[in-house]
Image: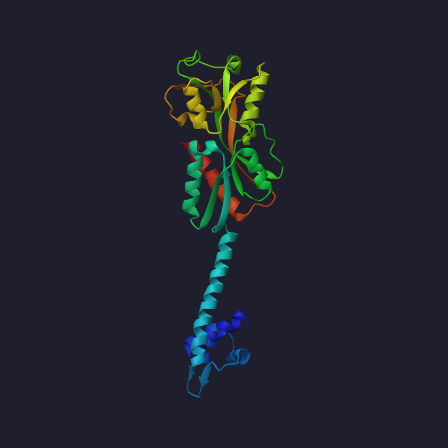
Length: 301
């Protein structure tokens, strides 16, 4: 049984006239009658009572009409859903984001703008460190990632869009000798005790800080580790040491700390969007387009 047979049957059932149904379907009346007869033979039931003056549905025909209309409606809905997915208007996007994403104004703006334009797309958001996001993209566990590349060599099969630059900052106890310094260089921190994100966290920040310190002629003395920025800043306030984090974490307002930007072109980080480059779906392309629009609008503000 083909869908066209159901469409022929529904047209005749709704018109109760082979002539009008044939006109509606833009086919000849004899072929339409033949198709209806073939359908009746296939299902083994008479669907119409025919007379010279009129036709009407049999009991079997009335039952068959209800199901035929449902099948045609479902078919049309399935085709429409497929077209909307192809256009990037429907489906699911698995998105990874780093811890600092929530503290960047551009991240919620992109998510909100995308949701407004594509409300039928289900966004599955997961907080994942940069290095693990790259692995997840390779494994198709993620479609898009908000990452901080830093020391990461982005593989050629990934496409990257830089969203914002964030300066690295030193978080200091409020009574620290450098708390009121006009500027801070990495070298000023050589004798400090550091509180850092663990190396096994999967973030690119830890190795980058080590490289900056090594280039300044020393290795940071790590006395404590914590996985959450708020915890690290709280430990700084408690006088346990100092820490280097992207400036966006300055929005975590914990009393007893001071933030000072590091005056170095090298102490700059990039907040970026990444996806697989070799097979961009309509969904990921649309998300990148929205991100580009938001980025441009924020630059003009």
